[in-house]
Image 1 (spheres, helix red, strand yellow):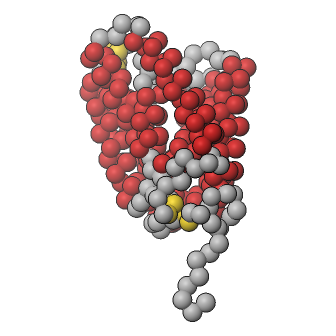
Image 2: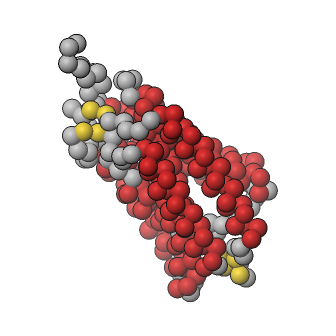
Image 3: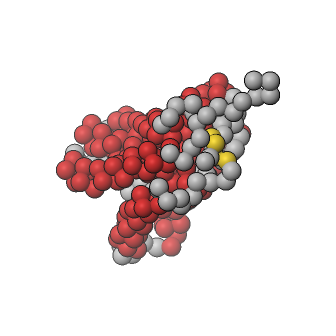
Length: 265
């Protein structure tokens, strides 16, 4: 059985969460106004590098407040029998998605310099969002739910919900409500799957890499046009949501929720 470990002060984590969001969106908006985002539709190196530096600085600041990425002891839950099938399905989903997506991108004939700039933007998104959502937010909510029988489930749901709701910011850039709500939905589902990976690996690095690869997209700085397709979103992401939920319920069976008795009790 594994014990949950939560490090850092809960109040300061909350301050760091709000502060990081305010700074990120504030500075990002300033960069959009002061730095040329695109040159003939291509992301510029100056903008991409500025976003990466911002993500690195905020990522390091947030890491200071949640102290440690490890949430279970001894070691990581890893690939235990109750969860191995469900974790494998989650990884299979992401591998399949990435193979299709990267195949399409590289068939479009982008120049190496263009791909490099897009990669910097994708990496900045992976660093900031994973450090915030699977690092700081996950640690904050785990501190709230750690004594509950389904602590990992409620922590994953809460942090993933915030991750999804962050995409409401696209409404302020003129994106349609329907398209934005679809983004909120599949970002929540992906957040649940990332939470499963975060729990199994006892860290955020694997999720950060996968997140960055998913965001490796020429349209990452553009707002989605049209109203999208709800049927496609539901068909693709509902199975991933169900698999993630089963994983989280089974992962909780590996956790010893009994409080540690102190000397003299």
